[in-house]
Length: 112
Length: 114
Image (cartoon, rainbow over all chains, first blue to last red; front, side, top):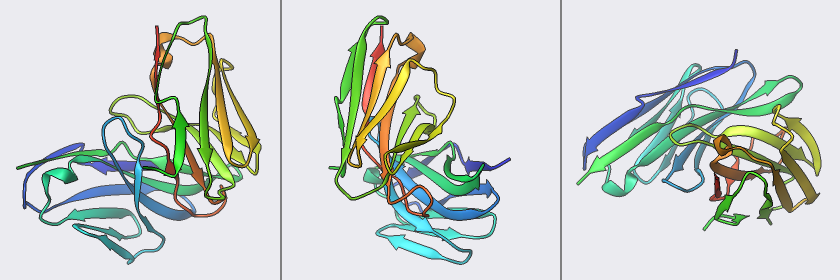
């Protein structure tokens, strides 16, 4: 069964304290892995798409990497405004169509 | 601001009411989605429209009725809802449902059923 697991469930960091979020996946026919940021009461905001193992994408303090079994979202020197829930999703083929399967997210809190 | 616009932002309705949620995008995307999200949970797929035709219905109760009038608009008609249907309802779009393009979400409608 296709599955996406994120860890940790919640993470508290001091401002400037770098860390990584993990997204592990078990899917057949992976077509893409996506990272989103979601603020409370808002819709997920697209961050990155990764297509193949070894690929990396960067945006400001965020860097996403992909291997054959997992993806990491590295946060370098985070600021309080980086506090949010980070979701990863994979697009996989299922029953003749394509579905986006979401992980349960990591709730990040960055303290000033 | 997002490129997917949802109205209303908040909705309170009784169990006997009929209401509709609306979603609009002008990015030329041909796939549109309805998701339901409960607190501290990931978005849960309800419906997918591809080229204005319903392609996926995730066994959603008939009290939720989707409609895609054209390639830019998506509606969700609500009737006889239950309190457990209270949630954030998210609309999303993508280039096509068979193409590995990201979903673009609106900011959702916060629905409360009393």
